[in-house]
Amino acid sequence: MRVLTIFMLLMLCVFVPAHAQTPAPEYAPVVCPYPESRNYSPNIGHTVQDHRLLLVDVTTGATLMTLDEKVLSYRERNIFWAQNCRYLVAQNVYAPYEPYPRRFTSLYDTFSGQRIFQSGREIYFQLLWSPTQEQFIIKSPPNTYLMNEAWAAPVLLFDQAAGYKVMRYYEWDMARGQLMVSFSRNSSYLMVYDIHNGATLAAISQPEMCTPTGVYFTTSADSRYLLVYTFRGEPGCVTVYDRDTGTVVAQVNGGGATARDEEQFALSSDGRYLVVGLRALRVWDLQNLPESFEERLPLYRHEGPIAIIQSLHFVSGDVVETTSDEGVQGWNIVTGAQVSG
Image (cartoon, rainbow, N blue to C red; front, side):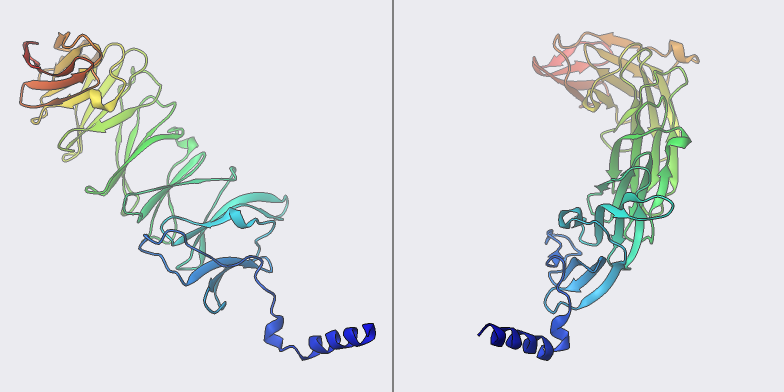
């Protein structure tokens, strides 16, 4: 009986059709898990077979595209879809490159079939998406890149050697087609980039005497101006930049700390008065500033609410409204008089 069983198994191996002997995928095809993405397709998945990273038709199993021929020491959880369902990330993958083996992370474009990015000194990188998911930042220390779906490859925005150090804060402005980035351990720059071509639109710098701890930024209520500021050390500095004209309107001396939060800044609609609130209301008339930066201290300093000012905004040309533990109150920025609340 045992001999007969062995004979039957051998016969099955001989007569099984050739196509049935195709090696099975090393893991089942994985479809992008973000069905709300505009690039989502329920019929396309990724898998690894014979150390090849493949795109396959999940209904038929047919190979649609080979993304990489040398995927080694992979783990299923380390290969995943980016959230726009177009790019594929293969993380912490080992390859025996000469002269030394190394681990790296790669980014593949599943539309073109190309590997468009590979990590350098660091194994990992981070993808930071725009609201439309058409653009994203690749944060791969020490370098930072910008990628647009319309491009074949990412654009290098800056590297550590350029002196801008490491990206700290960023903000997408889709209405203007801009990306704004500030840096850690840097005394001066806020960079503005065009998200459609990667070009540098502005490098907004603070005066040299400003504290070298990095810059922060916010936009005015109408988005026309950028308020670039430092908040540690002395002096605290604020630069007002006109986005329409591409010029610096004013740079003022905040004395000690300027503010702790972007909600504590306000600019009048005509761009004349800058108000910063923290423990007091400090007011600058940007049309009448001294020549010397050291002398560009607040024109007015009003105690305002006794509590720390959490946020403020203009309600008219010379009145701001503050929010604090005392509630919502209105103040005339010229006289310091409380007008409401």
